[in-house]
Image 1 (cartoon, rainbow, N blue to C red):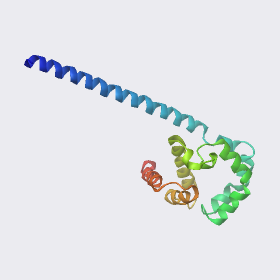
Image 2: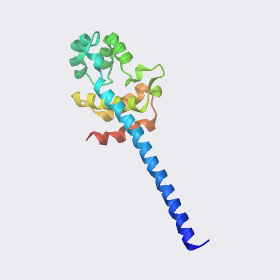
Image 3: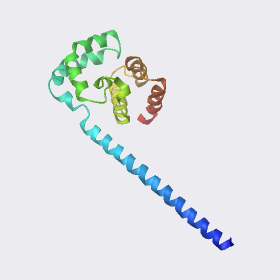
Image 4: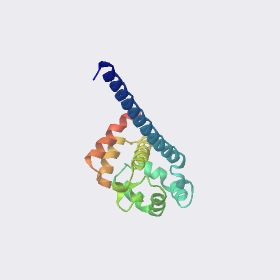
Length: 161
């Protein structure tokens, strides 16, 4: 094969390779954009059920009591028991809670997990003794998620800063 023919083959191979890389980049971009759209939908609908009955009535009665109790403590759990009707309604309406699913957290998708994590982070910030690290630990016991997921959540705390 002549030198010129080899150069032509290299250029064709390079062009084909570049096109495949560009195609991959665009496909990943499109898929990420689909995920962004879903995140935006979630951001606009997050916890809207709290503004309607029966949740709003329970929130009026119990929000301060929950803030005064340490997350995961026996006192906190007793308050949650008193709120059972509202919590069942809330979990049924909001898929970012593991309780929404019969199989718990293992049935959630990435967007559910992301919204759940953001929910926990803000709840931790709004609680006088809140600590997202502690919430991740308590919730691992509560929901039985893996050490791998726990580390992913802990690694994501850096994104909150």
